[in-house]
Structure formats: structure tokens, C-alpha cells
Length: 226
Ligand code: CA
Image 1 (cartoon, protein in one colour):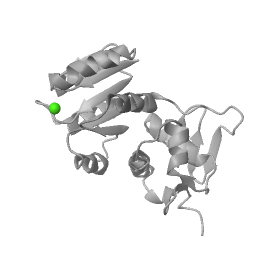
Image 2 (spheres, protein in one colour; image 1 turned 90 degrees about the vertical axis):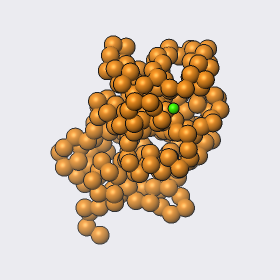
Image 3 (cartoon, protein in one colour; image 1 turned 45 degrees about the vertical axis):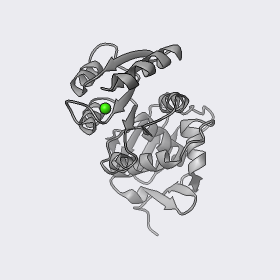
Image 4 (cartoon, helix red, strand yellow; image 1 turned 180 degrees about the vertical axis):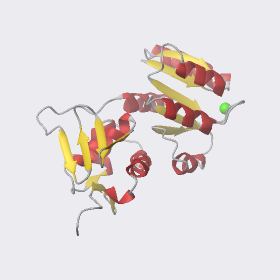
């Protein structure tokens, strides 16, 4: 598993590199946004990116956008300020998760494992769910809406797949965390909300994913007659 660590502060980066290598990760470290984009596009593309937002050359948000437009690599954004989290969400960067400095090393490793984990394919279940104009194919991992394929990140696909397991049924945030992320993950459920926001944007009409107040979400066809 190759990790691209983008962090200009060597006091933070050096122990992280050592720790991640001890965990068995192969780590490439870049201190600049330009270096990170080169590493992302170069040979030995990373399996996951840890991206500090405060970089000396490029804006971290811009680095995230450019990586996301070029690949589906999971990106964990590292922010120095909690209020940046709202920007991460609000700007719909397509990041897969975030941590706020200072963060614990175990928490970071848990998040790396969670974003790189694919939801298991359940052989016995129906592989294709059709809901109105929306078609979710779990075998090919393709989603089409009105015949046009949607470009989803792996986690967005897994989330939509989990909601499509039982269209119309309410799914709790904890259930979605368990099946899409990690059953041993007890972190904040805001991660689910971030991915739902991105999914709604890609679906064009936010009504495809309805909020079930105090519970979570359900998949619904906004074009169906009521
Ligand atoms: Ca920094």
C-alpha cells in the first residue's frame, strides 16, 4: 500500500513517515503541492493521499481538486483548523475524509485503512439495482443516470450501493459507516454527511438521497409520481 504524504512541516512529516513505514506502508513524502501532483501523476501512483491544506506553493484545495479530476485515489485532507472542515465540505473537493491537527497516529491509520477498504461484494445479492432512471451495477461498479455514467469515487460508489441495497428504506449513519467504512470505526459520523453531499451533487438532484431526520438517509426516486 503506497501512501503519498503531502506535508511541508518536517517536524510533523518525519515521525509520520517513520510511523507509517512501521505499519507496513510504502511512503512517498512531498513538501510541496507541485511535488505532490508530480508524484500523483508519476510511476507508482499512490493508493492513498494524505494532504495537508497549508502548503508553501499551491493551495491545498487546488491540489485536491486537481488530483480528484485526474484519478479516484482516496484523499484524506489534513487541516490545521476545525473551521476548515466546513470549507472542505462546502467546496465539495471530493476528499474522502479529513483529520484535524493535532491528530492521533492510531486515528490516522484507522482512517487510512477505512478509506482504502472496499465494501465487500455480496455474491448472493442482486448485483444491479434500478430505481427509475438510476442504475447501480455492483459487479462493474458503474452507475448510470438517464443512461449517462456518473463518475463516483470508490467511497461514493460504496455509499450509493449501500443505500441501493434497499431503496426507500431508512439507513442510519452508523449502519452506513459499518458497511461502507469499517465496522470497528467509532469516529464521528460527519464523514457520511460529507459523502452524501458529494453524492447528491453528482446525482444532480439532491432529492435522490433524502434526509431521514435523526436517523440518516434513504434513496428515493425524485422523478417518481407521488
Ligand atoms: Ca503546512
